[in-house]
Amino acid sequence: MKHIKVEEENFLWVSNQRAFDLMREGMLPPETSDPTNNPDYEMIDA
Image 1 (cartoon, rainbow, N blue to C red):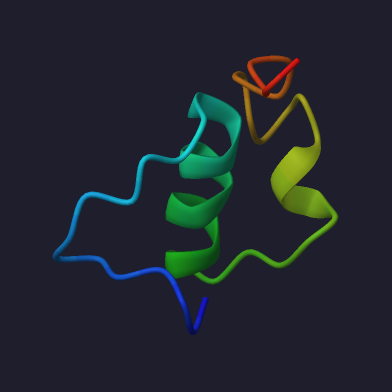
Image 2: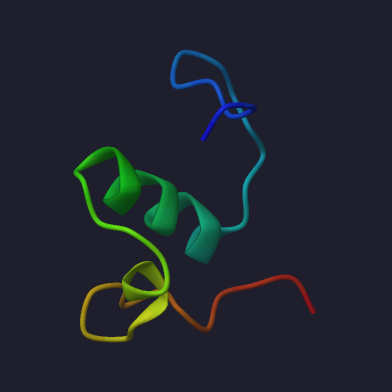
């Protein structure tokens, strides 16, 4: 959370961006990777 800037382009993978957005809403890992909470959980770097 400290090194990711809300006001800048972060070039995050889709799942990581969704997890970041969930953390900004107050959710903590590992819940941010749960498919129920993060429908993009599989969209990560290969």
